[in-house]
Image (cartoon, rainbow, N blue to C red; front, side, top):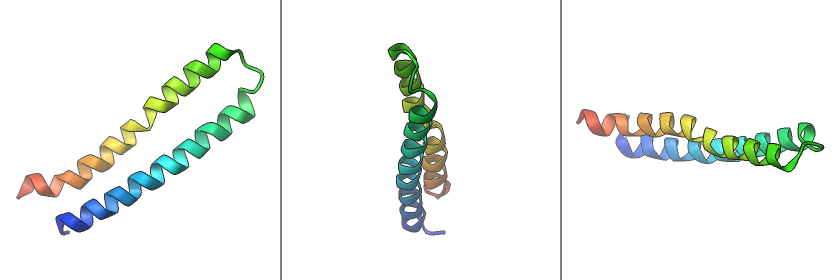
Length: 70
């Protein structure tokens, strides 16, 4: 697969990941954490704000794999 096509697909996947992940995190928080104290909200959004990086790193690694093999 050409590098440019792989990067295009990876970029689209990351955009979709961020949108879906953000919607899921906010929906989950509004449904289950509505009556929780402020510090629970703080911890939840701190961890969910960092958690999306793991799947994004896998996509970026996949995007760059072919460039390293050249």
